[in-house]
Image (cartoon, rainbow, N blue to C red):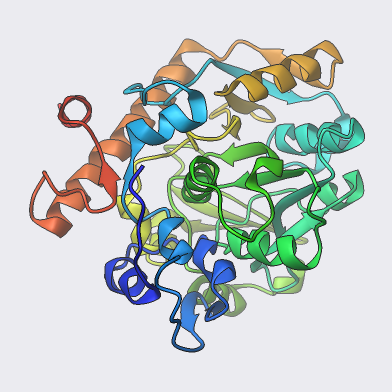
Length: 374
């Protein structure tokens, strides 16, 4: 593992000012001189702690060797497979009809988190809550009711790990066992923390469960929120959804019905950094969850770690989830979409650096790179 002794100036020069920043929030809580403000990372004062540079080290867009990271997280080399180190891929939904009724799709994430809290596998969950103006905010859930408040997809980038850093100091005791629900870039940052634990923060070993979300892009929060205020009455909005292809639309569900907008109109608000991401399914999570495309009310679930597999077995044994075999056509489409995201990201990273041998933040062996670009 490469150890960096760089400053926030390097973080800005290499990531924030080059459109690689994902707004994950990992830097803004570690450093008291950095904060999240109006959709970007802002500097409050000059930082002189260049010998630590944890803001730089845990950014998901500073250099990381995927093989080294995989050995630290999964105790095995990084997998060249489209879904990473997947032990199993299944179709599932919550066995609780109340959860399914309020869920984005099958309610699997809500069920996992509620089970983990009820069985005292974790003491709290860090996830995203949607505010009245439909912008996302990091939130610590301690009860099932708290988790239920956070159901549904927001689609806007959220500085979730700013919440991790802040809550670790202000709200969570040092021995608190934590679950985190995160997008691929946020999951990658957590994996970097696990591989080289932060100093003077909540013990990263107390993060007992990482639930990853499938993600192909996220929206710039301040710009998209401004667009929404002009397009709809925010008080009437119930949820957002992006139906599977070939729908090619962004749906806004309101109290009076559905408003559908062309997906191309929404893509103008996409975070530029999303073009450089190779991970669609949160490969370094314990369990990853997304929609089962074309199968209403069901999730696709990818189990990647030993801890994730053990938890999933408990959920199925205690009949908290209903599990089915994911149709082969769905699995093939998911694998193809995940590989396409990798190929597109390599193309964009090469275009940005001008050299396929320089993938900026991404460390890949020549063999793995060859498989991805073949």
